[in-house]
Image 1: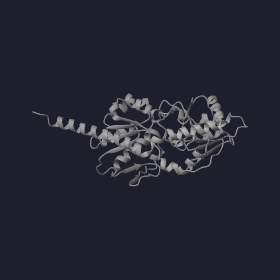
Image 2 (image 1 turned 60 degrees about the vertical axis):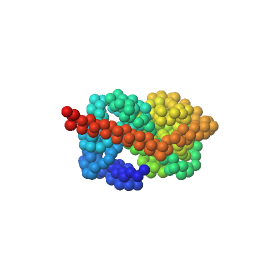
Image 3 (image 1 turned 90 degrees about the horizontal axis):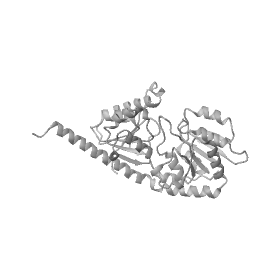
Image 4 (image 1 turned 135 degrees about the vertical axis):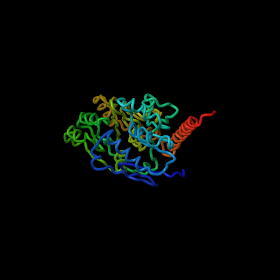
Length: 342
């Protein structure tokens, strides 16, 4: 679209055909976790913004909003993408920090509701998903591995992988099943202990993106079992959207459904993330019904066709337009206050 974009990030490979700069936190800072680490990165990022920008787009919630509202608002229009549900513990602080953000991109209906609860006007919120790179996914060619199930994500309490492990371990031994767990996180050792060396369960750790896609496409089932905690919850999981685009049948926790991002609720099957027995029965029914697996995979692929990146980019541009309008209104009000008419 002819825009010059500068990307500042602390982890990953950047993935931007333009100016991309990884911010390496001091070794002592890397020992922090959660909100403390986020605040440190947000502070470091603002120090790298030495030149003027036409628009600031941050990803996060309270910490990022606090920094950009202090440092960059109203110097430039500001947009904040919120990926997951908000911690109600910080609702008062969030209300203050969000007040000066020009526009919000809420990844999911639950995030939208959380933002409204923090006093953000509905007119400043664009609700959407992160979308999928259908061109990249279309290039994946992995033969199906009957009975394979894949879970992808950080191994933390929100992802609730322990319920999937328990469900798989309770399946009859004569059922062909293998659970592939991709990702890493603070609960990995605990989850490996729970798996107790079961040969039907493999932990792969972090894998390159292409390998992840191959695992997912080769699987009969993709499961996301996330649950809402007091402190956080899912928005619209990108891993779910990618699994659907790859044509894999998906089982989705009732606390991680994509909501309005995917209007076709028949394109995935919902289960209670706290009911191990129900999930185990659901897995058994799916793995023994090839026609249902095929039908769910086809519906899944069709249901996310509208979430291609070019389409989602238009939604992001809509958020930018809202932020620019808000910024212009704020500047206009300040000028009126500075130069009241006689």
